[in-house]
Amino acid sequence: DIQMTQSPSSLSASVGDRVTITCRASQSISNYLNWYQQKPGKAPKLLIYAASSLQIGVPSRFSGSGSGTDFTLTISSLQPEDFATYYCQQSYSRLSITFGQGTRLEIK
Amino acid sequence: EVQLVQSGAEVKKPGESLRISCKGSRYSFTSYWISWVRQMPGKGLEWMGRIDPSDSSVSYSPSFQGHVIISGDKSTSTAYLQWSSLKASDTAMYYCARLFSGYCGSNSCYQFDYWGQGTLVTVSS
Image 1: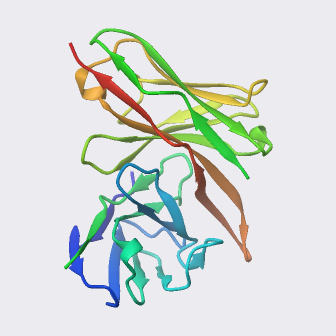
Image 2 (image 1 turned 180 degrees about the horizontal axis):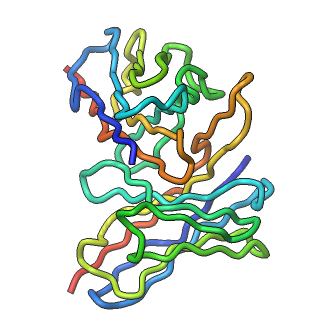
């Protein structure tokens, strides 16, 4: 299986801050990397697909970049509703999908 | 809008069997794979496996192979996840998710674009 490692595991930030979360794959996955946001008690929500494409309806303050093994999710100016847990997920192999362990974004 | 509606919360005893469901609507159910994802209390997301509703072919994560069965019924647009003998360690929230497979620009892409609301399974004596 391809292992996905996110950093940091948790992060404290303030409204208006610029935040970056990183995700590293154990082997090259080209751009088959997606990002999800999950709020407590809710299902995950797709934010970014194919490493850098913004899902319809997602605010433009979210952006993604990277290819190969190293990827980033950036929130340009944190809003109160952005405090949540974020997961990366590789789909290089549709038959063996894996998620990162998650990054919990908390209010400072 | 596309909907995936899951069956309700379950409370079971160890050793009991269980089948939970995920019903798709407002899209062509046979055109997209459905995956199941486990989230244990306070933990992250784990991909369990998937079904192609068009031919009912399935594949599993090695971590779940032999422990659960994924099936589907295209006549009712429903996917299922079942256990023959539950354990306390099966206590978790279970989500179904639709895998979009297509082209994003010039490259292929695969992502979970719609999710069910989740089914909480509690296994306790």
